[in-house]
Length: 287
Image (tube, rainbow, N blue to C red; front, side, top):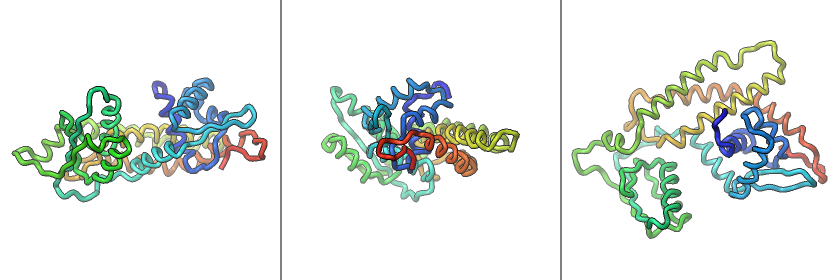
């Protein structure tokens, strides 16, 4: 998985394998779990330190050993992402109205404006241009919470509306989102991983331990690739999606392969974590 940002790999590891494990994890275990994906020991230590400084992880020491755990901020982020990965929301009802958001943020607050744009995209908004964003969802509560958190209450205006010209909903969608490109990426995901469904877990001469390790790597790569879709997909209502919609078979393939890999992959992670040294208080970094 060369070319992947180390921080993204750490988020995938914690989100898929460590989110439900309450104790902090020994850095040596994290190094072992990330080694198959091209991260060196020094690289792992560096990215963990940086993520702790950003507030995604907390760190503690026991003697000369370091341990890491998700902060509340990191946990909320990953739980929100997991909900969107495992429960795509194309089937919610739509009343035909659009939620409009307009903002005016000074140039000197450019970083705040960029953060706002990222969060609006995450909420499924599309940009019409000139500070005007739209969504077919009733996201008033989400926008209110976002504006309060970012201190932008006086900079945002929100409306509910329908197009008042000859512009159709489909034309509006085409202006704001490139669904054809997204549809193609879903199709490519399905094609590639469908082939793996028939090949990756075929019994062979390797030991059960190696099969578990293989399942761990494969499940990691599966979720790491699929988790990009919630960052790109606005989850529009089906009435606004192209037909056929490739997100459906992609989700089916993802769930099928994921379900096959859960048991052996979790056994491998547990085995790695159980090799962590005991702390002076007698605890180890396992669940």
